[in-house]
Image (cartoon, rainbow, N blue to C red; front, side, top):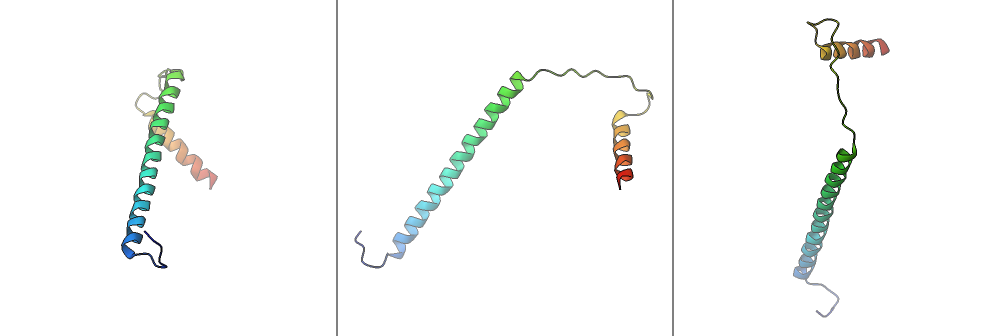
Length: 82
């Protein structure tokens, strides 16, 4: 194409679409690579991490759920901190 001082609107739109597709393709590719890298690192960390054994301690009050006690404790601490 010879440059004659003005570019054709069709050529400008074509270049814009090509640039848009190139940019979107690069973003898609980089995000895809990032997903695989994060999954790989996550699996390596989970393999090397020691297994934590949880021991169930007997509750002082068998009818009370420990999750409820923890929630009440947090609520009281937040109320007292105000």
